[in-house]
Image 1: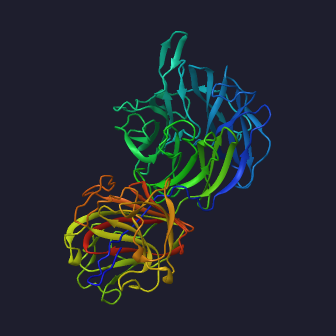
Image 2: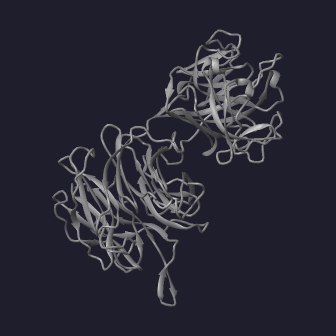
Image 3: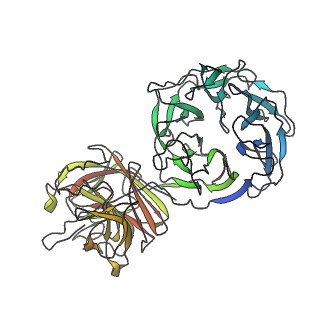
Amino acid sequence: MKKDSLSLAFLCFALLAAGALFAAPAKTLVGTVPLGPDNPRNSEGDFIRLKNGEILYVYTHYYGNRSGDNDPAYLASRRSADGGETWSGEDEIVLPNEGKLNVMSVTLRRMNDGRIALFYLVKESEIDCRPYLRFSGDEGKTWGARIALVSEPSYNVVNNDRAAILSDGRILVPAARHPLKKIERGQELLWSADVFCLISDDGGATWREGDRAPNPGGVMYQEPGVCELADGRVLMNIRTDAGSQYFVYSSDGGQSWSEPVPSVLDSPLSPAVIKRIPGSDELLAVWNPLRDGRVSGNGSRALMYYGRLSADGGRLLGRRFVVGVSESDDQNWQYPAVLFNDGGTFLTAFFSWKEGIRIYKMNVPEVTELFNGRDLTGWTKHLNGRETGEDPENVFTVRDGVIRISGAEWGGISTDGEFSDYHASLEFKWGEETHGPRKGLARDSGFLFHAGGEEGGFARIWLYSFEANIVEGGIGDFWLVGNEEEGYTATGRVTVRGGQRIFDPKGGENVTLTKHAQGPFRWWGFDPDWKDVAGFRSKDEIAKQGEWTRLEVVAEGDAAEFYVDGVLVNRVTDLSRTSGRLQIQSEGAEVFYRNITVTQ
């Protein structure tokens, strides 16, 4: 932003960000299943709540001195009698090794008749791995005869915490069947699998195979999961080598599937768990995000995230929270399981090769819709030269679930409430009009956060604040909307190019801003040849011309990150304020806003 004596033209804006390396609030490590002598790996387990209130966790316990997927293992359990706060310290054997290699990969489900279903894999050889099912009528004390879901030898992968019991009683078990190819010594598996559901309509007594999910692009498919949506469809998420989970949908109970689409869950070659949140249409996802673009190999699973998704899984609602961060590239977190608790919490368990299993208790992310789609309830209008709340020229209007800001006068709309430690998210799209001293210039607006003071405190227009800029060519630039004397300073890691301080997390130096007049920290793709003209686009522009663009600000402690359509574009630290109101600017350009949320 800058201000001169002839006009109050400001290059401002701002917005949003989806959380990256910030820790999740209310995250508690409540249990571990560590490795030990003759126990080189503990992995792939699942939870179930027993009728007496206890929680049973059954997992894959490897024994001997080898920890590969084909090495010896049996199924063991731990218990919690206090809602997951503490766990037993000794293993109970649930099922001995009944395969020539091992048994592994547990799913536990409560049947409609009250029995507990135990789904697991039996591995007979490196090319024969099949899912089985046992029932318990005494809350896991004993287990009945095993039922084969696949009768013929073949290699089928069914991950832990995967089976789904639909509202009509149908059982779906998502599977990945790996084809075999002939080699000189016999046969070996192909890495890319056919994914489908094993289906039972008689309570698990008999099973058949559904249709294969389409794969027209030929990406690598592995390790699917399923979730019944509020509208009755079934969502299948698929592990791929394409940089994200792929989604397909079924309208016939998992029999057939739609064409695949890349999802909002960026992901290496790693599985994800997606479940519907109790009492809500929305979903919870736990997954490994991409790290430095690594799709596979060491470090690709070094992070574990969770987040809230829209009812169809198509949109991430607010920020992504971090569950686990590994300390080294060879300590990957993987294969999560999820159990919802009362009171808006859930348990998640996953493992690493070095540490074994960790169990965390987390808060389900709470999303607040700041814009109700009908009017500006919860927002305060302020325009330069007018009394707060006055808007005779209808600069701010609402129609068809969208806020229109004409830009004809300088000012903003501010939340009535204050926020700290949050993820703010919104979508914007430019209109055609430009006005006043910015007629014909780059379209400008902005999202101000940690805002304080009186309405119009800064230049009689905006609240004192920090800004994630939303200007053509500069979406995600950071500005001080104020000075040190008003309590606003910040630090960025930048490199100077073409006279501009540009965000550079790897090669930059820390610079601190104390005055608005010092100018911005530009986003990493800022064009040093930027011109203040309407329609300007940089060569690395992320925002889509004429389409809705999502901006996000993740504010945690004294740091904030800005994202544009899920891409990190800027980061600031040492913020002198860590809470305040939010404000959206009117600054000479027509702009539309929708889907404005805060996640905490």
